[in-house]
Image (tube, rainbow, N blue to C red; front, side, top):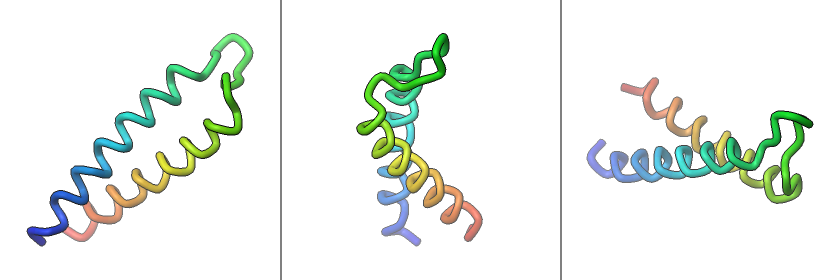
Length: 60
């Protein structure tokens, strides 16, 4: 339990940074991303980090 707290913190940091980045790069007028190839990678990593946060919070 003690060694999982730093990993959970890292996933929170990754999720916050990528969430803000995706929000900034999304154009709400055209509903498109500025760099679609890079944003797909951001989205996959963002969803994985959110999945890990939810998975670890349900175990408690």
